[in-house]
Length: 363
Image (cartoon, rainbow, N blue to C red; front, side, top):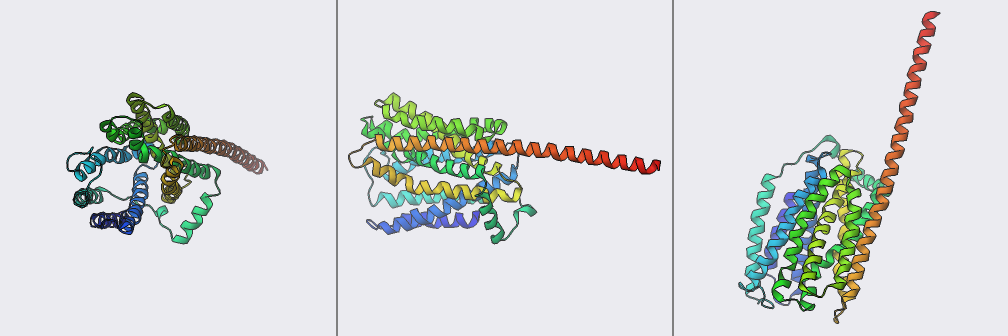
């Protein structure tokens, strides 16, 4: 899966560089459809491979460290691409039909090298439990959707993505429209991604100790509250503080939900299906979120509307994770009670058997 999705991504990346001016369908097919499918497949398969190497111990931290690659790329790529498109001056408004193809080809060559390296270094660890036909996998996924803990984890990740994508897509435009200097506005996305590195490491260390859902709840609520903080931003300092904080909290949210979904697995063969399914549900707001925020924003730039929508959605995701945590605690408590009863019954049975044997020997 990872090899085929890598090849699809590389081909579509190069096809994007030859898209014609004003031919929207070519960009939609190459970047929107082809690269989108490839990135989703690579993301889900990469996490599945990683979790198989860290089945229990330090799983959340391993996912967090691996996901820092996305944050590092989010720091470098906006600067690199903008400077390439604008011929060294990233603050110039818009590139040209001559500079865009060359910049995308440079990007595609770099991506090709990174993906070749990734395919050479990744080692897949299979077990007998990982093998199964499509019908059995589909039946497993239908069973997952009957588990309250897993269902509320999926709902939480979907709601969170509505809020997470607001700063990713609109943060630079927001800064520019607030009258903040163009030089700083250009670097806000890189600041956001740089700070998310912290959120992908430190909270994940805590998650391995206290549980992924236990850490996700306050991180989500904090992220939603910080998104609402954009309502009061009217200066460069305020913009920098809010952007940095959202970066930290969002880093925790986007890396921990996969660990939370995989932690509900009852056997190792379920891990890939559970992570893939939660990624599928979280991809729906990734598609719908930016257009919804754009419609709420309107051409009059009514920023309060998308900010409130994104903030409330993220806080709603936090409360959904809280419900998942409550169901998880109840299941563990009931499991413990069942285990205690079973042990007691076993002990009583053994005691009765020993009495029977003693009695028969006396006879």
